[in-house]
Amino acid sequence: MELIDRYLQAVKFSLPISQRDDIIKELRDSILSQIEEKEAALGRPLTKDEQVELLKKLGSPMQLASRYGKQQHLIGATMFPIYWKALKAALGLAFLVQAAASIAMAAAGKPFTASLGALLHYPSVALSVFGWVTVVFAAMDFFGAKIQLSDRWDPRKLPPLVKSDPRKSRFELIARLVIQIIFGVWWLAGLHYQYLIFGRGITLLKFGPVWHTIYPVFVVIVLVDVMFTAAMIARPHWTQGRHVALLVMSALGLIVLYFLINAPELFVASDPSSAESQSLVKTINYALHMGLLIAAIVNVVNIVKEAIRLIGWSFGRSHQAKVGS
Image 1 (cartoon, rainbow, N blue to C red):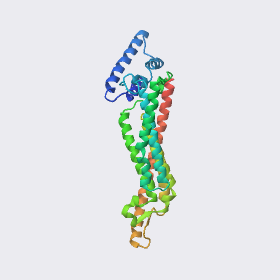
Image 2 (cartoon, helix red, strand yellow):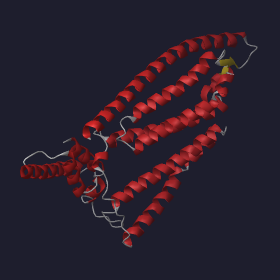
Image 3 (cartoon, one colour):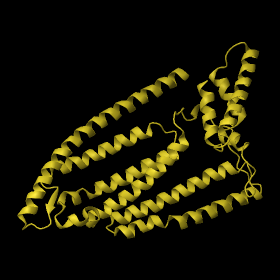
Image 4 (cartoon, rainbow, N blue to C red):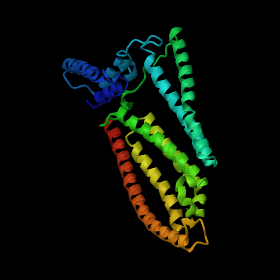
C-alpha cells in the first residue's frame, strides 16, 4: 500500500507535531478498514486506480489535515492551512530577496558590515509581510471568499516516501542556509577587503591575481549554493535534490580548481622586498598546489558518482512509470 503511505505522509506533514502520530494512526486504521470492505465486496484486491479514487474522496492532504486543526479566532480552520503555507512561502521569499541583496552588495565590493546590513533588515521586512498576508487571508475568510481547492489533484503525484523526518531536515536546512549566506557575504567581501580573511596575516601575504580573475565564478557558486538549499527547504521531499546540488557544486568547484591549479601564484607577498616573506609565500603556494590537485581528483570522483546515481534514479523512475501504466 505504498500509495496510502505516501498519502498519509503528506497529511502528517501538515498536522500539528503534538498530535500527528495519533491522528495518522487513526487515519491509517480508517483507510485500511475502507479498503478491506471494498476488497471484500469485490472479491479481489483494489487496483491502483481504485485506490486513487478512494483517496480523492478523502480530499487532498491539506484539506484532510485542516479538519484536525484547532479553531482559529482570526482565520478559520479550513483556510488556516492555506494561509500558513502562503505565509511561510512569503516569508521565505522575502528572506531570499534580502539574502540576494546582501550577496549582490558584497559582490559589488561593498564592505562586509554594509553587505550584511541588508540581511539584518529582514526582521522588519518579515513583520510587514506577516501583517499583509494575515490581513488578506482574514478578509477572505471574513467575507466568505473561500479558496476552492481543486478536486482534480492526483494522488499519483504525491511525494515519494522518505525515511527522515522532513520537519527536522527542514530546520537543519534553514540553519545551513543562514550559514551559507553569511559565509558567502564574508567571502565575497573578503576578496575585496582582504583583511577580513587574513586578519593580521595581511602584513605577510595577500591573494594573487587569479582570485580576482575568477571572482564572477565565486559569485555564481554562492548564489547557486543558496538557491539549492532554498529549493530543498521549499521541497523537503525532494530526495534527489541533495545529489543534484552536490553534482552541480562539484562541477563549479572543478572550474575554480582548474584556474587555481594553473595559476603560477595563488598568494603573493605583501612586501615584495622581504626575502623571508617571499620564501614563506613560495612554500605556501607549493603546498596548496599539491592540495588542490588532490581536491580536483576528489571532485572528479564525486561528479562521476553523483552522475551515476542520478542516472540510475532516472531509469528507476522510468521503469516504475512503465510498470504502473
